[in-house]
Length: 468
Image (cartoon, rainbow, N blue to C red):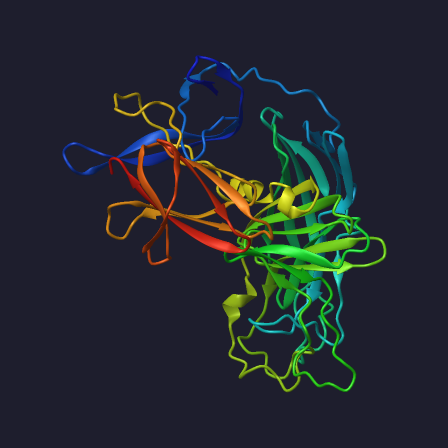
């Protein structure tokens, strides 16, 4: 009926059980053939303090008595911790107030769904000439709290989102016939976290459309947005450069931009910002108008062709041979992991990289029976500190004799990296991407070294441990 957790010092750790399922698992037998064991699979949450790139140990046992941990009661549409307060509105959008020290910012109307017809192809979005845009602004979703609120608080928003089934035969307009596409949004706020996590599940039953989730910032005068890219952060103008009168372009300039993990938009005076972190989603747009700069994250594009023939409205002369791609209509249930990180200042001074990496690389839990071993029950791995110092690679050198650590600095200022290793260092050098040794690095202590990374620079470190 419950589980009990204790830390290394014997302290009891609060835990929330989400569900318990009876199932079977395969086990290896000493005789060779595989056996089957009936087990209970428990999905639970607890707060663990983990050393950087390391591990810790907790001790678990089952109990017949229910968990006694309780959280403070809050209204049914509110979740709140020491950093964030989230209030869900009747239509399913939510307002989020962030506070850290003397800084505070409120974002209203977050999480609006916008759905447009799409007669484009696998390459390019194109709204049909006679488009119909559907939004959740007038929705009446079911809103309920989930769980006990221990360690994390969760609100569930369930929509019956009614959408046109597809385009007409001429691919010029959306059909009048509609069907319900269920959408579930779970807002998750963890104890001690400055991020609001959003889990979205969509049962996509319609075709030829693009679905976006919109996050208004309330920032006025925004002209640019930034996003993580390969070894860099790229800042772009949010409005595409207009075509000069008299010029002729084959294709309209896009109003969406790529992202690798996160994008960020800041107020014009850089007093506040909102970072949108997404696992596996790579396209965003920012619509800047008088009252707000609204971020739209593309959740899906369901299209029927690799090339869209002469259908698109965004390109002159067509876009390829029109090869059917029925599986690109994504007629399936889709799951998304998103997080919002509101912050003071611009992205370069707001710890955005760490917040994104923590969300995109969650810790893993491994269960084991008690056993003897040579390692400590808690162990720290590589520790890296420094503003805008990003770890790209940690690997054994190609010759097997050293440790390769690849860092980069995506900011416009010099970044100082401090590295603390769990092993003693014999020598340290900078190196090329091909791992050819360049300059000697000074070792401050047996396990610590510092290096300055110039702006917009990739730096590879060749570390020779005293024992490998």
